[in-house]
Length: 90
Image (cartoon, rainbow, N blue to C red; front, side, top):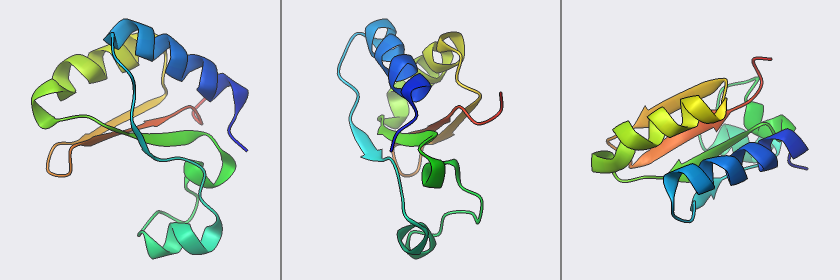
């Protein structure tokens, strides 16, 4: 299950960014989280995090919008062209 607050914030971010968001990872069960190298207490496992495909050249703008949208964690990965977004800090 994905947290309803996360869904609302993703929709807000999509509007700010002005284009669809391509989610590459959302909810993960424990075995899958381990398989992909996720941390033991990953927010993905409680439906409070997603990874969004964002080209490295767009990540500065995207991360600024994500911060303005209110995400608690915004972690860009330019080498793999995605940004991790989480809401578990509040």
